[in-house]
Image (cartoon, rainbow over all chains, first blue to last red; front, side):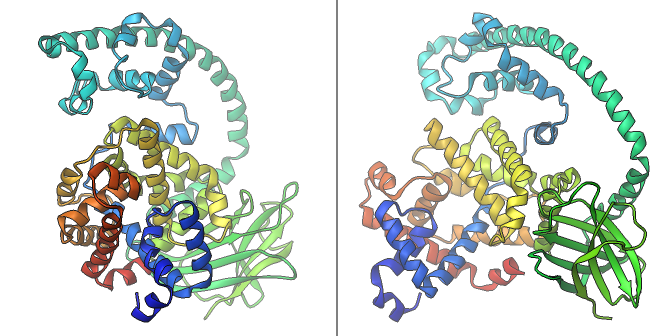
Amino acid sequence: MREGHEEENRKPCSDIDLYAMGLLEGEERERMERHIAGCSDCREELARIEELLGLLPLAAEPAEPPQGMRERVLGQVLGRPQADRLEEDAAERSEPALPPDVFALRQDEDGTDARQQLADRNERSSAAPLSGADRTERPAERAKEAPAAEGTGRSRRLAVGALAGAAAVMLLVTGVLAQRMDSLGRENKRLSAELQASTQTLDSTIEQLRKTEQPFAGAMVSQIVSLKPVKDLVARGQAYLVVDDRGTHLIVQASRLPELKDEQAFQVWLIKGDKPVNAGTFMPTGNAGAVTFTFPGGSYDQVAITLEPDAFGQEPRGSIVLAGALKT
Amino acid sequence: MTEADWEEHLMLQIASRSSDALEKLYDRYEKPLYSFVYRIVKDSMAAEEIVQELFLKLWNHAEAYVSNGRSGKVSTWIFTMARNGAIDWLRKRDRRPAAGGQDGMDELRDPVTTELTVENRMLAEQMRQALSGLSQEQQQVIEWVYFGGYTQQEIADRHDIPLGTVKSRIRLGLRQLRSQLGESWRGEVRS
């Protein structure tokens, strides 16, 4: 921070770092926000500190994610059937059915979600029944135990509890699974019909996926083109041309696209003279979408996104939404 | 195409509901994110939940992220969300790893083995070195504030340090951190 600047507005400017760390509250915070709005030095300073703070997470010592975390997290997020989660769901619904013993094991878990602790223990019971680290974190829990009982007694109680819990969970899981099987059967029929209909699309998607599997390691961005909207549209977009040893990749991103009706789709075209080459089709979610297209090389004059009546055109039939000139 | 561009592209694909893109982003961030969150909550179950919650948000709100002309990098956004989630959890449980903080900073000196790229690993290493270059007191306040989510007043009360001293340690700590890192890192981050 510059000296003159600091003197001029001594108080607010000197607190910018506290503000960046989220340490100003109430009136102080409001005053700072008003100040920042009118002080470009502080805005710059804030951006610098925020970048610095953005690096702090990287400094955390590496910790090994729990086994199966990827499947659980992605399963939950993408709504895929997932064994561990089923178990946990079942445990959640089953609270009244669990034997009292199971509760004994967690009465002292000071506020931690008991069901999750149970699920956690079940999960971990084969690998590491009771880690030392677990215990040191809960001094209150230890204080309740008689010193002599600390070792084996507690372990046994936990083990019995966990087993009883596991048994109850298994029963419930069986029930839940039976129900799911039913609905999955129905779902299956519907899906296989859909699948048949979309085999063609799928083939080309797989092909595209295969090509985009890896980030473009060692690739060079040869061009970045800003796509301009036509007429009064507010759409925005960018096209990147990336060259690597697999060829030239066109990456098109667009947002604020107009809404699609019926069968409509957006198609991307590479244009040389008056000859367009189809570079992909996309249906945006909300108003944004992206397409990746790999081709052997060669020069094109223009890249354009058109609004098409459906997704299957080999030539542009609709009108241009976004376009940009490529350097040849 | 830079790292940041690639991540932007992934976000756009995620906004278009590409589960494939989400998985790619997940694989990229699983380890550093989990490490960071675990560093704050010190509880593996909670850390997993917070990471899950974050990816759920990411999956459901990528579109808003993409269309709101956001500022800053994807990674900054992700880590900020992670920190908020982790500190919320600490506040709810009121289980902030009390006092100490010392151990934490020692652990920061361990070598990294994340899935992140070489560039990020170098940055992480620089960051660790810069942190260890701070005075003990400065390290502590940054630890309490950043990884512990404590307010200045809480730190002053808990550790019996005058509020003004807490403020100046934070300020000096950040400044020190910056001068340790020099300006070189900014170019790398920006690119």
